[in-house]
Image (cartoon, rainbow, N blue to C red; front, side, top):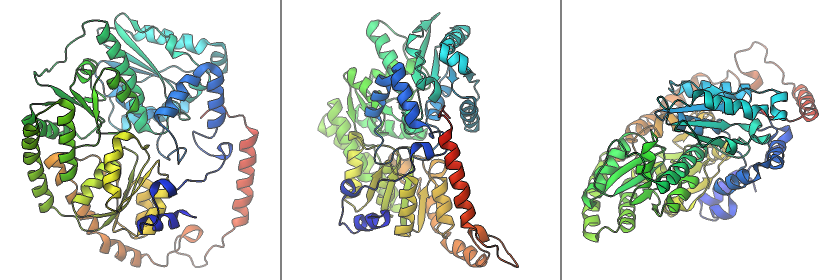
Length: 519
């Protein structure tokens, strides 16, 4: 059964997402293109070189199915972003030069104003162990306690596959902490989960420090019990959550990933942890090891906020009357805000940030029809309340969704608006369907509490209102051709599929003859 049939069955209620979750069929790894062309070979090499424990842990924390590798940016960008946003934290990368170039370019494109260290290698330093010595030398060279609290050293694909043993680096040098992580594209599926790789490693280091003795206090302290917020979010959201928690005698704690090292101690010293982004499994493991309760979902919309406040109250031992007062204050204001800014239209939604289900809940409560939600992140226990709520309202939820899943959903449901990644937006607009890029236009807005209730309406309703403009543009350009015949011609070029097939076979043969040596 093809994907369109599955989506139609799910839309009509004749199938369940678990039973009929679409599975993308792709070419064998050796025939693929891009950074993961030699994924199987690299994985085998890494396991043979002593990285089997690391890869096994990643496989458990970040399961890949049903789609093996979501089509998004290099996963290591996520961990790089976390380190570059932290004060007094240095970053060193080791990987293929093209990978390091791409990662640093992307990091500065997203606003990083930090130097990124790079330890290059060649075949000789890689196979003789000299690369590890070069990395050790680099760490010692920059371990200045006047400048840094920590240095993050990251193995990319090739050093991980070669077994470069970051665990043998010193744990600290001159009081500067050394945190070594492996973030191979063949072991960590998405950049969102790579954020958890580094956040979890830092929490583990900080937890061990706190267990060993006194640690530096955070810059800002409160006498109230705190709720740590897990997952990157819009800056206004922690403020809104703090306002909702105040009637319960609670305060919002640090947001993990944190902005400086000492915030990690405050994050661990909490009454409960809110898994706003539910895929931070390594971080959750550290919080649970510290004896902290973890609360699923987030205070989004009327139902989500009421359920979340109940769960937080139960986890923190708050009296029912206090929790009820907090719910009354928050829910009433959210309901009023949603009523002032309704959204009418059918919307398909997809992305790779991890907040897709939360955004879908908010859109549904705003009045939108949401037939499909696709997320590149995996299904976890901490997203179950959101999945159950959405599916009870007829929404098809696909975890580890592929680009093909998302494109097929646009075609199957013919939405009034498509929200998704860049190729989804392109696909929709080519079909005269208004579209919005999830990362820049949707996730970069408040979602929680009253601020979140009306935040999406303006941009979504403006996009929905563009449908007639798209139809007019399509009519204007009708007849200019598509594909090989795109443009205006006196004599339309003839398609030559036999040439494409010939060169495709040549490329495939050339790829098979080359040894997979990384990216």
